[in-house]
Length: 638
Image 1 (cartoon, rainbow, N blue to C red):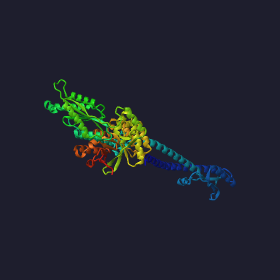
Image 2: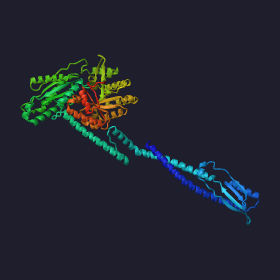
Image 3: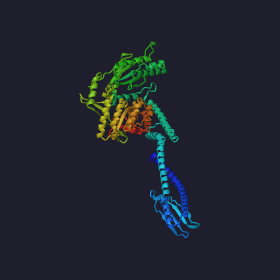
């Protein structure tokens, strides 16, 4: 029962009790008053009538007429004249009742009308005794009407008190809705804080819950910082802060195999051939400073979001640049900037830099790409000093990258003809049961009837501003698929779509009338969107999660230090980057990091899903670390 209903019941009970007490007090007070008035009236009327009768001739007929006239005009219940011997000489009696007053009321409050008695004289001789009893029906009617008015006033007062009290109660309990929302959020492991209300009782509760949320938030931030340190220790070179060899090669493998990775790119390997001599001549501290400068130079030359830079060994550095437009120009810029960072223009000698570059395409083997880069590096070494060599890229059929208009025609034609679908890859839990299907997009190029993966057309779609149209087409296809299939499906949403309120509103309207479908729709959002577009990301999550959609982050791992900032979003899952998952059974450092990540994710109510699982050895290790879901080439739906 709601608090408002309880309040109304309380008002009704209190007003009923108050009315009952008032009724008893007023009724019995009025009863005494009316009985006194009836007694005085009876006595006065009896004396007046007896005096009149004493002054007239004692003719029985005249006496009877006088009594009858008085009875008819005076509302009497009984008037009687009794002789001194007790014989009734004249008597008039009325049996009329108070017809407008309920019988139960008459029985509840008996009104006693004490008779008025007077002596009638005949000269000096007593003629008789006159008894006058006034009728009490008018007193009952007055008493009944008075109590009805009292009841009406009490009802009006109760209604007024109830309405005013309800308004006051709503004002007082308005913060209760916020308290309930906060409690529900904490129950869902979303540790939000709210403004403290003015009501003291609520304020103490909110203060305690806010303190809990702040404590958990602080714990999450501390744990995130610890995890970030573990990640850096496991994946980064301690001197330069760049990716270490193991993790860089995993990133390279991810770039070559992942569905969502760029179709082409370039690998640059930079070598300091005189590092040992530099270390002897300049000393370790100075050499370390130069190595840090080399790292800074690479970061300045490759500032892109997807660019990855690593240190392969003491003298070798590497940079992976997806979608590199001009490999030769970038290679020259890297070599020139690195030379400038390690050499003093006033010095007589120059420390050389060797640079080899290899262009890769999606699907190439890691060994093949590294071999091409090493070959270019050897050629540069043979020439002496600083040199640049680049490999060549074999081109399959597709429009030349320079033909932007050709790609635009191809993509728009495919969208207009609804030639968009997706491939299905299962995501399973530890027991081998289906969580959902991953659904990367495919688009058909009409001229060749080929269904090309997202990494082929998405870079061009992004350049042409067609990303939202592709997301919309994939969303429509997903709804159609869900209407005819049972399993949940997970689609990818681009950063542009997350930040587009018009497209988000369209998603909402499409799902609002089909809630069962919304509950089977999972949505992957790139990790960086949650932090770079935090406000839009939260609006997107709040809007679609209200319909039952599951929303999570994909390729998680690079910004793990910020995961504590998501304490109030209520994400459903995290998909951990396959570069971290690869060979996890042989990487104690990453195991420690991932175990902590699973703990903090589960604390925040998020499922952890591993991407790119290759075999059962990795799957078994991940299950022990606390992962609730897995996907990849080694995960097959039984």
